[in-house]
Length: 318
Image (cartoon, rainbow, N blue to C red; front, side, top):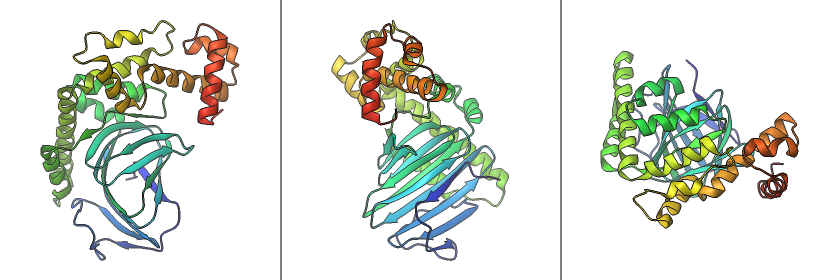
């Protein structure tokens, strides 16, 4: 059974040992159902990988202790949906080209979608990071989340989009979810069939909890607004101002929460999606700006050209 993703270290480890024969004294966390457990030694860092590989999903507890800045790469061979729980420390993600993806902060979790490719993870010096990573086949996940309308629509939309990656809102790991994670880490049984059934139920429960927390926090309204932009950004008549109507919060609060989730304002998010689409048309398909501007929501070439030049200058991609 193959991994859903592979981890590539920037420098080869000095040695690799089986965790069972060489337990670490700096962590008590363990994935008891793991079928593979390895401990990697570097000059000023240690990495522990414990993996449970199943056909439809892959569960991994990744732990890193480092004295200096540490980086590693995550290589995906196909599209995957992820649930990432950052139990301790912070883990910053970017694409191979250097585009920032997100920073997974301590005691938080979120679902995401990533297309095949290489992603970079970075950890600051003098820190310990513990992250539980659950990756899925997108089609398998769809049947589990179908009862939860907002989450189902969000995951379906990001899986169908042509974006390289998409991140859903980060939420805090509360004590109830912390108990669920403890059970995922601590569960063990010699019968693999029981392990599969137990883990599937736990994953479904975690996804349900995420949906409930998303709705109760009001962030579902913010994310649905983002989905509206994602679906309609090529429409020159898109009405972003309408997103602010009938919301149980002030304009200022909406914009602040939108920035937390999407990293920018609603207007700038729309512009970013347009520019990413334009860059693909121009860079990958060889179209001219004159051929592209109307395809990404602009009604005149001069406005598009000015914004596209600014995007290229700031991003360094064009």
